[in-house]
Length: 591
Image (tube, rainbow, N blue to C red; front, top):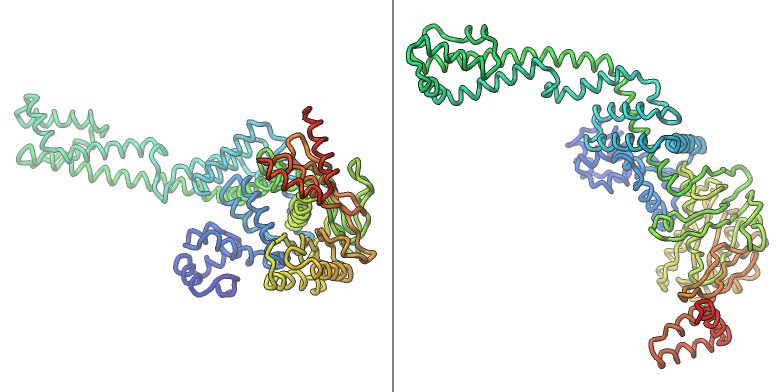
């Protein structure tokens, strides 16, 4: 396959990859989703990630029908990456895409949940040992040695179920031998400490080289000891060599010349001969040791290769398992065939939950042929089986957060990952239309929005519409007409959808297949913050609550003039309600 046939690879990128990797290696890196290899070749990591997402999951990326859907997808991956145990696992998470195959979704869910269960069963000390092993794996850039040592750490921790089972039947003795051999070899050379005799010969060679570099000083030192005749000098030099170099007496005597004319020639010839002999001995012994080590590695090659692959896969699934544990994620139920549903019981918004100190109210919500049979206390009814809902209610009432939560659940389920809910039912969709509120009031924005959210409804596939305050991009009268048309089109095309709006009264009559849900504010707390029940009430129109906002503005007015202005607004929205709200807040604080 030509490199240019991959999405995002143009002539310049092709030239870079070919020059640095060669065509075949570049193709292998793309097909295997290897971000690191492409980044090391000179591609920006973000660009490499985008290329690999399309190469390995192009059909899944087509599901993301709007820029907001793509933004939500990337936000989820960023949050998941925070729990990666290796850089390679982080890279693999970054190139995860929605899957277009139900079997693939189930298979990944099986692996991630099995990893989660195995991880939770480990003792804290064993978890720490595994994470430390993966830390060393990263420090050594995922080398074979680091992978084998990580496999041994996993074996020592006793992890042998789920994805971890891949290393459970590896021969520990063989891996131990392989780890020792890999730690001893460095690019074909034998590292210091790997062989005692080799270290001795190297030390002796180093000592002789030091003497040779300072031969004249050595001669002077020997003469200063009172040695003046040739025989005494020879004996003193021999004693010095045996004491300082750990060279055998036979090797020393064999190196001493018989025809030297003076002390300088005698010492110089002896040291040069010793250097040559020891260099040869070091090389010969190192070749023998390296050969034995290579043979050990050859015998253990299958175990090493299995360990490398298993450790990498385990890191990937363990990272996703840690992400699932962090947010209390569970396995979704897939609804397929003629039925269609998106439903959640006690769902949490992951983006909110990731913020320190943020309190997240779980939400129960449902569209379509769902199995939700109970709702939180205080909710008026169990949600009906309408596939389309219009969501109304209080300002800052969490309507957008509910859309984001449903989007997160569907994206995670479609990627084959657990979802942040006690229970969830999901129909895998062909198009996810997520549209956040964009307060840009012009014809260009209206046209571009319609171009992005309408065509997916016309493709014939299953579509999920999550549209937030469509009226923000055009005047209210036209917005109501267009929004009514979008609801009707969604119903006609048997899509699933939630449309957030403040124009519910202007949408009547809705198709009977659509319902209206509402979120309600209940007043102000002692800090004059809005009290909202974020759980929608089904088949109930929620109302905006400007009186609560105005009440807070009146209470917080900086001076009399400013207060008078806000009190004028209080009269407009209902002064009696504003005053009652302020009285309730004062009563709560004891004022």
